[in-house]
Length: 602
Image (cartoon, rainbow, N blue to C red; front, side, top):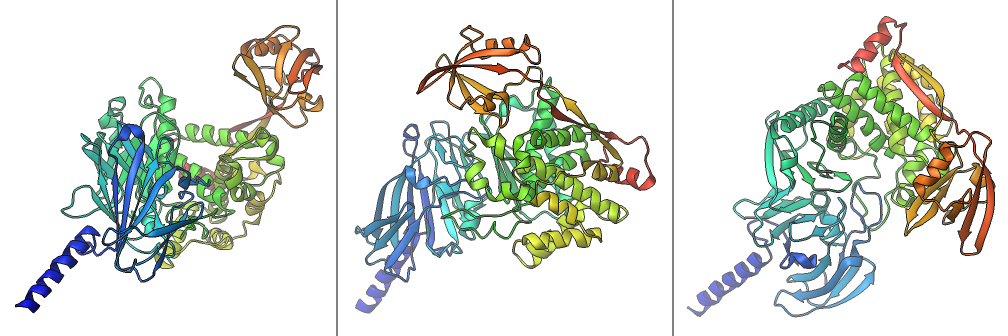
C-alpha cells in the first residue's frame, strides 16, 4: 500500500513537472511563454522553461542580429529583469558574461526557468514591437537560446493581450493547444516572425498549398484582385525551380512603415496603406515588385544560399561576398516573375533595369567599390550610410540585378537559348539545398553557372569582383536589345552639395567628391547662412541655382563651430549617364528568341 502510494505520487509529480515545462506531449525540452500584460508599456514578458539539462552551468544567449537583416541589432540592450529559478521555484545564481549572455549556475539538472522583460517599441521588420493595437515578434529579437543547443526543438506559447483574436506566423501550430507553436530547431524558430492582434486574414491556394495574408489595414486593398495577383505571382515564382518547399506560407502585411524581411515560409513587410490606389498604377507595380522580391527570397537565399548564410552564428557578423547574387539577382527575378505572370510588360522591366543601372553608375562610388566588396561590407555600411557614402559605395541590389541579367543573357546566348539562369537556380536548389543540405561556395556558384552555359563566364564574374567598366552593349545585344548611353543633365546647375533643413537652418549633409563645393572646402555639417546675400531655405537655394548659368558664381556664407567663412562657388553642368535600352531593330533569330524567353509578356 505504501509502495503503491509513493509510485502514484511520483507519477503525479513527474506529470506536473513535465506539463509545466511543456515536455511530454510535444517531446520538447524547451518551452517559451510570451505574454504582454500591459501593451501600452511596450514590454513583453518571456518565460523560458527547459528540462533534461545535463550541466550545472547553463549559458543563455540572446541573438545579436536576425537573419536577412545584416546589422548587429544588439537586442540585449532592451532586456531587463532577468531572473533564473530551478524546477522547484528556487532562485538560481547567474552572472552576465557578455553583452548578450547570462550564465546560470546551481542545481539545474532537473530543470530551469529564466524570465525577463523586453522593451519593444521600434517599428521595424527586424525588431520586436508592442503597442495597444498589435504585437510583432521577430523571434531572434525576443527569444533566448542555450549556447551550443541551437539544434534543439522548441515550443512557443503566446498569451495575446486582452481582446486580441488573431495570431499569424509561419511556425507550425501545436495540435489541440491554442496559440501554441512548434519549431524543429532554433534556426527555424528565428526564421518565423509572429504577428498578434486583430488583423484580418485572407487566404488563397497555389498548387494545393494554402497561403495566408495577414493584413493590419485590409480596407486599403481590393481583396479579389489582390489575391488574384498574389496567386499569379506565387505560381510564376515557384515555377522557376518547379517546387514549393513549404507546407504553408504567410504574408505579414503591417501598416505604415518601410522595409521587408524574407523568411522560409513567410515574409514580413510594411505598406504605405495607399499601395492599392487604383489611380496609381506605377505605385502598385512597385508594391507587387516588392512582394515578389521578398517571396522569391525563399528560393534565392533561404534555400539557395551562400554557405556563410546558414547555419548562423547569432553572436556576430556572418560575412559573404555573394549578396550581389542573393539580393541583386533576386531584384532581377522580381521583374522576371511579374513579367511571366503578366503584371509587368517588357517595357516595365527594362525601365526598372535602367533605373538600377543609373543608380550605381551615377555615383562616384562605382569607381571605388565592387559588388563583392559591397556584399562583404554590408555589416558596416548598408544601415549606417554616412555623409560620404555616395563617394565610396554602391548598392549590391542595383549592380547585382544588372549582373544577373548579364549572366542570364550570356548563358542563353552560349547555349543557343536551351538553358538560362533558371537552370542555374534549379541546379543549385536540387544539389545544394535538397541533396547536400548546405549552401554553396563562391567557386561552386561560378562552376554551376559555367556548366549551365557550357562556356567560361569569367568576364561577368570579373565585373562582379572589380570596378572594371562592363561591356553592357554586348550582353544586352545577346537578348536582342540595344543599349545606348547619353549625357543627362540635372535640372539645376551642380555644386556638389546635399542639403537638409532642420530647425530653421540649412545644413550641408553631403559633399560629392571632386565637386565645386569639395574643391572649396565645404564640409558636412556646415550651415548655409546666406546665398548671394539672401537668407535662404532649401527651395530658395534651388531657385537661385535655376536662375544661374554655367560658369556663374554663387556667393555663400557658411558657418560651423569655428565661425563663418565666405566662398564663391562656380556652378557647373553635371553630366550623368542616361541609359536607353530598347528592342534592337536588327535582330537575328537567336537574339529574338532570347528576348522573348526572358520577357514573354511584351
